[in-house]
Length: 467
Image (cartoon, rainbow, N blue to C red; front, side, top):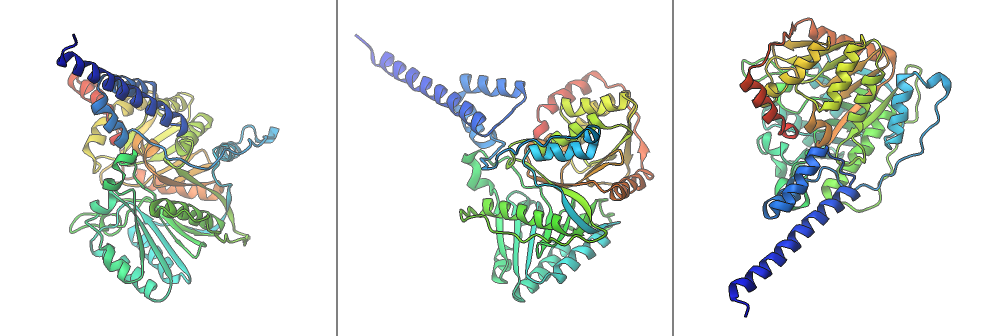
């Protein structure tokens, strides 16, 4: 006769088996349908955890395990390259971008690279003041400080004047900035949306996904973009502290229209709008001084890891130099290998970083990669003050500038926005900007790590996606 304990044990084992099977099936299904390409060690870790500890692993996977969202985009047909294009970095980059369904390269003009925070703020205010129909603003942090209040007052004024003003803020960044007064904005006529609010997205696997894109688009013709959040430290400084060194720019032309299209997609995702995509008018005017650039959106809304793919490809194709400025450097093995191999091939590799950033764990975790880079012949530079700029210049052919850091969170989890500049004159201008900052930096000298340091670095790199 079966005892009650045996009966309950049998039912529990059956239920346990169903949970394990369901968890593994869900993992396989989401990985396949969302193209969640993972490092083999990460994939093995999830499978083992779902098999051995499904009651813990399955909720964690639901909250943190999904790094892509479903998209309706399809890959485009690969463009055939002519013999004259085979060695061209620009052509290779544009071809690879087309394969990943990114918008085609388009024209822009009147590019202004901001020298400092004061000029960046002046340009931002000018775009807001000059708009005639629409202002669309996307940012990670919109601080409730003097600078944030100043921008908010101007946006409210333009909304009361009849312009359509929309503000899109990341769900976590909104709290990091000190709780933006959304009701006051809404009362003034500003449309405000949060991108992936954590509490409302925890069971959809999106809690760990952040919108790190920064752009302001006016009338689909003017674009302000770069790495600056809307907070005082990125522009004017706080109290007695110097402002952070950052890189932003503004331009006009069709490229701004493409940024408008990207904002529309992000806005519709945040507001759950299911209406057909609105038609965005893109400036067709091609002025004599127009140049060619390309919008590089990366993140969970892309089938591929677009910016990461272009970086690795560009580093392998480089011939003369690679200039990189980033506040955080926690690369994966492939990205690090592409940089070290470039240095070993004789390419001049310069990496500029802050001596101390605002993320101490990232500062500690970077040294293993920096030791490998310098041993390959690369040059690493530490700026005494905080530098928050994000840019990569390869040879004289390509400059990638925008919001993405060279860490695994930016490359694989965050929604990021970069602009690829192909105009040689503008590529040189960005290179000159980085070199000016490098002139005030000191050369990094790698020191042999102690045993405890190597162990700690290895353990910390397990958390690389969170750094």
